Length: 188
Ligand SMILES: NC(=O)c1ccc[n+]([C@@H]2O[C@H](COP(=O)([O-])OP(=O)(O)OC[C@H]3O[C@@H](n4cnc5c(N)ncnc54)[C@H](OP(=O)(O)O)[C@@H]3O)[C@@H](O)[C@H]2O)c1
Image 1 (cartoon, rainbow, N blue to C red):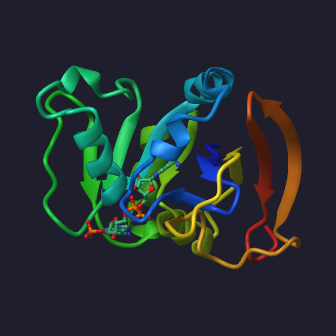
Image 2 (cartoon, helix red, strand yellow; image 1 turned 60 degrees about the vertical axis):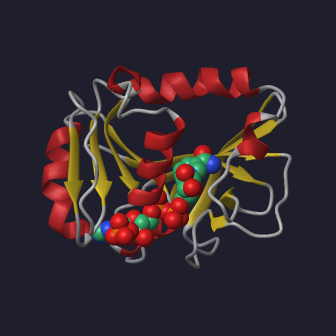
């Protein structure tokens, strides 16, 4: 059965991006290549991914994907973008645009992932929607030595220690890689 895993980089004080959706603070952290190597191992186990429209629009703009569709990173991963608005499509990429609650897309998502895992790319509220639905199994964060005054939150939900268990902690360059298993609300 696929596991649902939120894997992201974050600031020390829990932001995914600054208020302008910039990741400039992330790209200058030393040791990103070491964090990258464990990420590529993770990616091999992923069959489907889910992201919100802000994240998708950021990737489109950052990589100029409409002009260079071959730069879409996730060629062998079925990608789901959640949005209530029409979104530009990257030619040749298997990107499915969906809206609505997690249960409404769950069967399609699970079947797209096959025997591999489902990666929640973000943002934080999208991951919160999976947690609310009892469909979040693991959180893997690469904590950067950065704090920001404000920004886009890592996970704007209350999950206390009865639901989160620290499974591992390792250093990769200047990042702390933390893996937590998540227990669903119902105790499952
Ligand atoms: N540090 C990292 O490694 C990392 C990782 C991921 C993301 N990021 C960055 O963090 C920021 C995240 O932005 P964000 O928190 O605003 O989140 P987001 O999840 O990327 O986008 C949120 C938007 O997605 C749409 N959406 C979400 N759930 C939906 C649903 N169930 N049905 C329909 N539409 C839905 C809504 O917009 P519409 O309906 O209006 O389209 C919503 O406003 C971005 O800048 C991203 O680039 C950083």
